[in-house]
Image: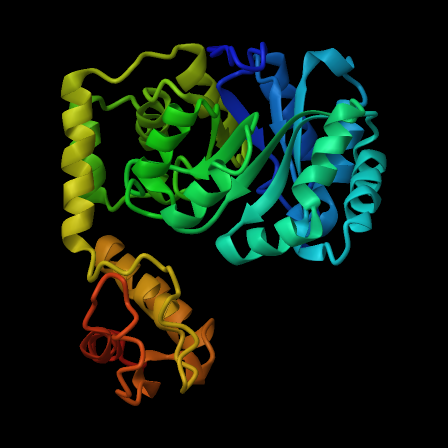
Length: 375
């Protein structure tokens, strides 16, 4: 298994991290523990040492399940990462209460990589007021966590504010070849290099999206290397960034495990020619994207209840993947009637605050026209 030493922390985790938020499930939605155990055991037997979970994953079942599996392994044979559910914190005392609960769920005496979970600008400001970062730092001084970091879901300005607040041991960002301008993006990556913050990457395959490209786009990759999986292209693109120390993959099947193990047990950096192919695919996908909505939600809430970012997400995905059936299901079944594009009253409140300067009213009209109600 390919590893990349984190000099700052003097640890060498496997570059492939097992993300424990997408385990196979049973009909009732519970984790299929037999299959999930087999997957975790195979990954670890083949060199995966970094195991990433969190308090809310699988409706709270991920941490207890992971703890049960890891109990059969020597504690120094794996690196355990989990996250503080900061949205549940009302007072500083909640930090220790929740952390103690997590230790019991995981059946361990300490956590290796501990994160403030899913930070955005507003949430961060509240945590600072409560003294939460300092309380987590106390847990580190007491030896209950080895390394302190955060995971992030917001735009670059918020990331810069958080990243420069203290000397973080590491941080976790969404990063893939399509999302270089989404959330913290490439600017965020560059800042981690400048500040010397080792980076853990989540969503390298964009929630599976980059493993399920439309056939004509997938052929660009397949024509160059028929044997390489679409996932392997996405993972290798992320891995070529030197400050990326772990790449998380939320594996749901044994096939995912096998494919990812093959990628990193036989790792080769992308060549200039292969990078050009990734750039070509990125250009094709971007050319099919309907508009440049980043989901920042500056336009929200709409005075009339329209969910502007969600409409544009469905519309953009439809443009790229040409899957009308899926788009119709997401638009007409999964979304409430008052949230749909055709409820726009053209008040223009959204357009004045959109950082992308989108023609939101016209685009919402087009969404409604492109996704008419199925007969």
